[in-house]
Amino acid sequence: MEHTAPSACQRCGACCRKGGPALHAQDLPLFGESGSLGLADVVTLRAGELAHDQVQGRIAPLEGEMLKLRGREGSWTCRFYHHATRACTLYQDRPAECRLLNCRDTAALAAMYASERLTRADLLPPGHPVLLLLGEHEGLVPAACIPELGLALRAGDGTSHNAAKELVRMALADEAFRRNLHERTGIGPEYHDFFFGRGAGALFAAAGVTLRADARNGLRVQSDPLWRSAQ
Image 1 (tube, rainbow, N blue to C red):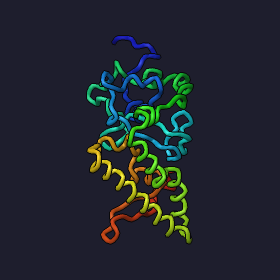
Image 2: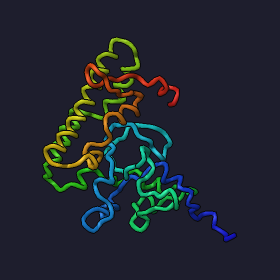
Image 3: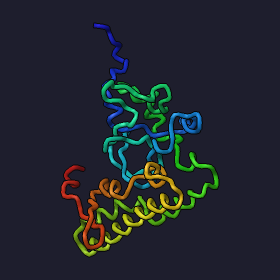
Image 4: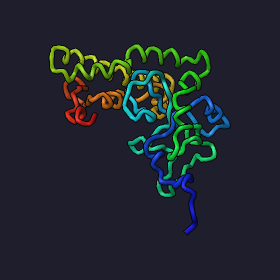
């Protein structure tokens, strides 16, 4: 059997299945006409939303906006990971975090983890008309408010009803922004996770809130009974 150095990658795929990398300033050359990445490959995580901090190993609100490679198959598994061969289909042009990652010594990755993260503004030219729309979306669907609203919903007191109404309003507003962007500009749904970030359902789920269809008013929210025990 060929000897493999302990420090060499064993290609187990664990890091790829746990989620695509966050993107940094070093990754800008991967975009553009000659690049290997496009906006449809990216999901925006907005300031204030709950996300997994891989260095600290906990779920916490994001201090600032960040971009990640999207997952696939209904999971966070990196969309460029090929299960059958346990290989990266973007290997030669892989992002900076992937180049630094060594699962046996994560010091280099931890050192750059939160530095010079890309945002949507870095990938859109100054004055891009959609930037104004993104500001309006942030005002009407503030991700930072969702964890607090989730707590209020679970409180079961007088604040629960108001929290439920506000969450439904935010979900409807988020849906309207995505629909209008498609109808007015032709920008398809495959780009919406970049422009608007994760949909309301995903953001609510991270805060222990389930978003469901309702025959009477279209949508309703409820507290996830399993969420508390999972934290």
